[in-house]
Length: 319
Ligand code: GDP
Image 1 (tube, protein in one colour):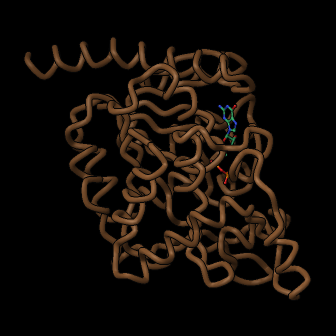
Image 2 (cartoon, helix red, strand yellow):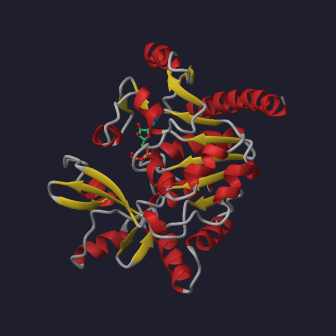
């Protein structure tokens, strides 16, 4: 079983590649829910949705979020009704938010609701929210404390970041199956998602980071930082706000207590050499995913690399 820790857009691209080269039953996805929000009274989980849509073959590649070919009639009607529309939800997308909200209102947990939705959409991989408890990523800015979606979507990440915290983390527990998946995995991959606000919340759930430290499988992260900057989005400002360099060294530092291998882009070959001097195993390859073939190629490289590592690990465990 390959276990992947993942967030939204960067993660969805990587998972799209993985599904082209790994049997769906062999994939378990542990997904960030720190961005979840109540929108028009509905429970929306942007990262669970992106990963679900990509595995159901429904993700819009043009937008990187939502359902391909979706319409936005409800959004237009809500605008006429003077409701906020900065967070865009398509009509087909809305059906998932409605069903999830209904299942939660009936008393189902987020994991149970996710299992039901993914089953009905024909997803054969296992998608686990990181936690059934509410853990909310909060970004401290001069304009006040913002939810991640307010910071990212509404305000287009223009506010200087003063702090990042995960409200509810102390009381959160890993969702059923999460720790077991990590402990019994053959390989654990960290998608090139935002290390602070996509992977960070997963690691903030008490018990998950500890499980990663104890896991017997090799842990391989793909860097979202290429050539000293994120490929897209606010990962750079968020890393800097946490005192991390915006570089592959910063990504390595974010995961330093459990990471075995960092996969970085060929553009970072020099920085990779420096990082290797610290004792970390660093693997250089092409990591920019523009086409379906780019995604498959990166997934193939990571999976074959991990297969080699697993053999080395098994030998080490036996000796
Ligand atoms: P966000 O930061 O909230 O937008 O969402 P995510 O955590 O899902 O993904 C964004 C991260 O994915 C960013 O830090 C990007 O640098 C990274 N990313 C996006 N596309 C690519 C790509 O093609 N290759 C690599 N290596 N990273 C990518």
